[in-house]
Amino acid sequence: VRKKKSIIIPTYNEAGNIVFLITKITEILKEKHDYEIIVADDDSPDGTWKLVEEISQRDDRIKLLRRIGKKKGLSPSIVDAFKTASGDVFIVMDADGQHDVSCLPVMIDVSNDNDMVIGTRFASDGAIEDNWPFYRLLASRLAAFAARAALKVNASDPMSGFFAISKDAFESVSQYLDPEGFKIMLELLFLLKKTNPDARVFETGIKFKSRKTGQSKLGTGVVFSYFKMLMRLRCLKVSR
Ligand SMILES: Nc1nc2c(ncn2[C@@H]2O[C@H](COP(=O)(O)OP(=O)(O)O)[C@@H](O)[C@H]2O)c(=O)[nH]1
Ligand SMILES: [Mg+2]
Image 1 (cartoon, rainbow, N blue to C red):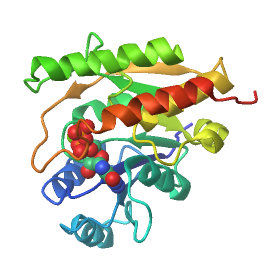
Image 2: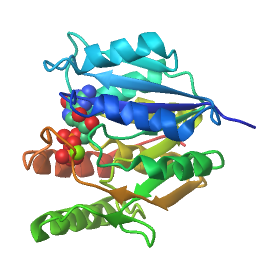
Image 3: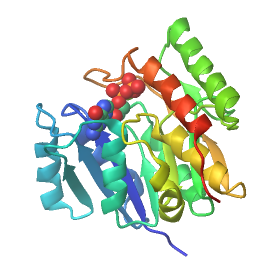
Image 4: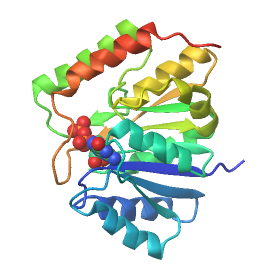
């Protein structure tokens, strides 16, 4: 079966990156795949949404979800996009070029036979091409360690943010999601395994590049909310 893919790209002030990324994706996927691209934009002041709106008028596979008057945030944007998506599989990637588009075909392929696919920088075929300073690598490893220790999830890179999840898997856990969160991949992975220990989860290596242009929105202030999320999930009661 050919499952339709919804590629979800959350954006906030990515005017310098989004057109390049969409062009790249359409070039790589060509007509070989049944897909749509949904850009979930938090009404970016730099006009990211306007650029997407223009492209969407030329290509009806490209869709703009412009969030106005809603609480801004990464997870809520992604969840809103999931709710409007028409695909059987949802694939989430960043707009800034850090998630390498060349890894998309494999991600798509593997997503056909799994409930969730986790992109990892720390697998044999994964890589960080950016010259990350030592403290960032350490922070990333520590965050992964904390996730494994607190949640018992067996993921080598729970912070990567490049992942796929089937529509069915998402719907089975959506009631437990925290609308404030920002590490939705880890949240979904944990909830899926907790509600269904037999869920099929696969890890695939991804290349992690440096941000093309613009600035990161997720600074060190997110550390606290990350640990808060780990604690919330650890204490959460779910029904199987
Ligand atoms: N819709 C939406 N997208 C966001 C928000 N914050 C970050 N993003 C997007 O999420 C992706 C990852 O954010 P980024 O700032 O690169 O985080 P970093 O890679 O951890 O430094 C990028 O595509 C951002 O534009 C937000 O509040 N709302
Ligand atoms: Mg980034």
